[in-house]
Amino acid sequence: MLKSLANSFTGLRAHQQALDVTAHNIANINTVAFKEKQLSFAQLPGKTLEQRRLPVAGEPQSPRLCDRGVALAAAVSLSENGSLAFTGRGLDLAIAGEGYFRVVRPEGTYAYTRAGNFLLDAEGKVVTPKGDRLDFFPALQLRAGSINFSAIQITPSGEIWASIAEEAGGNFGVDTVKVGEIPLYRFTNPQGLYHIGDNLFLPSEASGPPLEGRPKEAGFGEIKAGFLERANVDLGRQMVALISAQRGLQASARAAVTAEELWALTLNVRA
Image 1 (tube, rainbow, N blue to C red):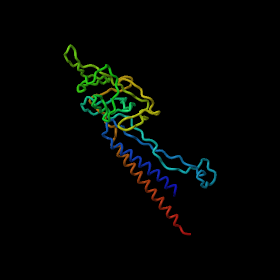
Image 2: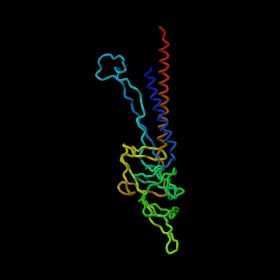
Image 3: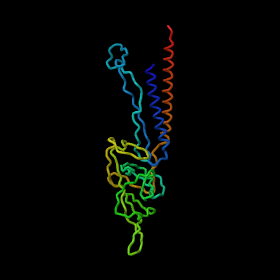
Image 4: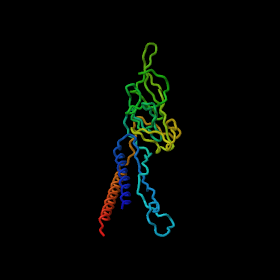
């Protein structure tokens, strides 16, 4: 009975974790470029009856195992892209295809994201809502405040065009010039990226190092200005997962109660 209680506990824990992940997916259904997490379970390695010092009758051809329950083996992000939603904002960027934007975090380290809901900070830099700066290649040296980002244009190939205030012969004029290019980055195994929150990812040994490239070239997607990528969460699939996890949790709890009742009966046996 004690083993039944232990096995039931592993089921309670695994299905509670499944409920947590499913609730996390549903809660982020409107998060820009959110990637749905999918679960997989695994049977815990068993021990032979001899290891547990239990009696064994005869000489079985294969070791008789005493199972130990279940565990959540992995929760990996679904790599398929979400649909694109038109916003009309020039600094809303979506990647149609493969690739990630690179941003510079406040401490100077790099992170990667597909969420392109960028803004302008007080210094006129293109940043994420949390203040991480979009990393791009500048095409020319510009003085502070010379770029009019209200008229910025970003092409599908990642070129940034903006209106520049210039002075010539005592006269001021405005010219539209290329001020930079936005590169994209991809990974051999995107599901191996380490998620750190705020729609940001870091490379890991499982994902491989980032591979840099230009949009629309060498397998990279194109940049769609004025669009945002939706979450790829399938609400119908999540409701099925929610019901399945709930039923598994209830069944594990029922098994634990039954094992406890049998244990109580055993302790109360009178000769």
